[in-house]
Image (cartoon, rainbow, N blue to C red; front, top):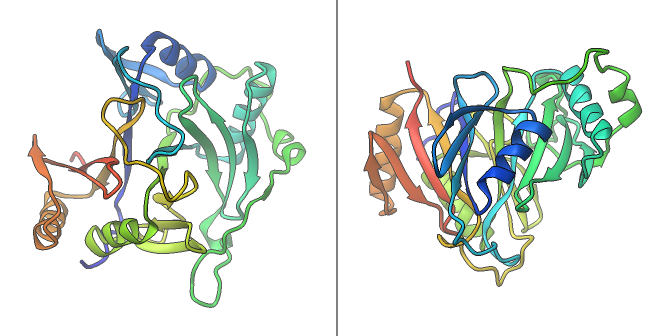
Amino acid sequence: MSPIHEETHIGSVSLKVKNLEKLVHFYTETIGLQILTKRKTSVELTADGITPLIILESNPELHQRPMKSAGLYHLALLVPTRKDLANVLYHFIETNTQLLGASNHKFSEAIYLQDPENNGIEIYRDVDREDWVRDERGKLPAVSEPLDVQSLLAERDSKSWSRLPENTVMGHVHLNVIHIGEAENFYMNVLGFEEQTRMGNHALFISAGGYHHHIAVNIWNGRDAVSNQEDVTGLLHYEIIVPSRLEVEKVLSALEREKVPYHIESENILLKDPSGNGIVIKARKP
């Protein structure tokens, strides 16, 4: 497979949830998204009032996702500027929101937390790409330093915070998988994403067009983890958006060649990675 198109990016992330009302309240009041559509068992959440970013699919019969399983490590909402990230952090401080951490990765600055059903969330801003420091192989070193919180907060607005900026996007997804080698073969050799960072034999960060990562995979839930199951909470699927129908056809050809199971629904490709994580591949709307 040749490299996937450089304009490929991540679209919405769909989550299977038990308590729809509680999750909607969290994602609107704490995270700052807006309701785009609301049905009896599903809610689409958006930042710009047009584009779904997170879709919650409710089923109260779901079991809690096991700790030792494949699935979502975190979804990552990308805000446009450092000031926007500062505003988010100050909002979390004001509302006593429990955070899991805050890091400076050199190519980005990030805040980490979980929703009420233990789905991981990252909210981050990118450092200007010309300031990313690559090694002699052209790869991005794995760096995770403490975030300079005081420096960040110094950039916040004095205005009261109400919601995420409308040009917030889904920057990347980070997945728990069972085998790094299988994930690498699928995402790089079949789909055509390119390595940007590798952490030993336990984590891999890949992207289109030289971005720091659109998809990350890790085996931090253990080598004896089970695949992502349909009857548990967590990731249903995430979208990979390619720029045209021609690019969808290229992916289809690669899947056929490698005998990867898939099916077509409304011109979109639906499939699962080797760990059972659901994926929808679709063309960007004109």
